[in-house]
Amino acid sequence: MPADSLAPDTTNARAVPMPATDSATTAPGSEARAALLQLSPQLTQLADRADLRDDATVREQRDNFTSATARLADGDPRAGLRPGLVAAANLLLAVQQKAYPNLDTSANDLVRQAGRLLGRDATPAEQTQNRAYLAQLASLLQAVSEPAGKQL
Image 1 (spheres, rainbow, N blue to C red):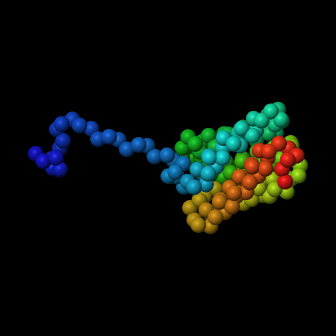
Image 2: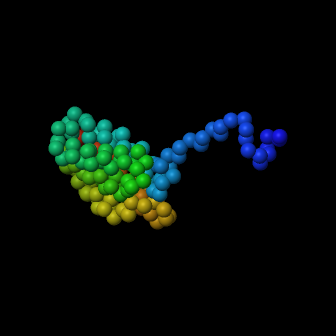
């Protein structure tokens, strides 16, 4: 029987299964989700920095952030994007309040911007809004990653 026949396979050969898809790349909000997950290690390392880790507010916001992003990273279908986006802003606000008083306006702007996000990334408008937010998040993260007193 030819190999391309529609007859049943009697050789007991098994097809190689397709690799599992990564929900971070296939789920709604995939671009923003992937970008947030990419920033996650830097945000948690920042919160673990010696001058910040003992602050109760920073610790609480770090816990909130890691909880929200862990569900995203695990591919939980019920995990929304918005909690992670908002938690990232709140974590940076806590860091700013602890050690970077000159970044007050930037941190509060980021929190306000996060509050306006819908947590979706399906339409061009949502994608643009998420990209703008994530760019602002990355910029503030860069600023607070420098020792206090050396930023803008």
